[in-house]
Figure 1 (cartoon, rainbow, N blue to C red):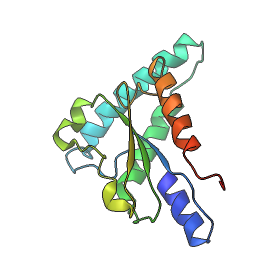
Figure 2: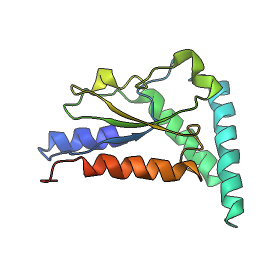
Figure 3: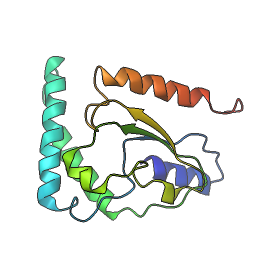
Figure 4: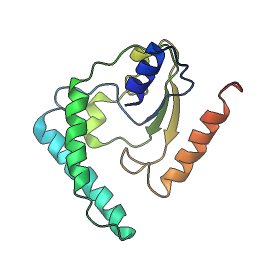
Length: 153
């Protein structure tokens, strides 16, 4: 979504100062996009989210699974543009087994930006980097990257 928003802003001559990617991948190989693989991955992600919701007494997280299905469908159809903005990747230090065969230090984003990709390694997996205790380090890196933006922002 961040890439498409940036593309549309740029198209309308609006300045884009920051594009943050939360361990997103520019693309996935066909093996990863197989329906059975996606289903297994989404079920695992859903269980992690459900456990987190349960710990805060939040009920009815099933809608998240429907949202994940829709998201995976969009991902498989979207054509990434090449942007003239720097991309900032907050990359999980631990890799999901599903992604091990396609490991890339920049999650393949460099091909979609004319500027070098800035990478912050965040503890945890793709799913857990947004949870305690890893989210604190993610927040630190996020703030650090925003503080580095030019004053005119």
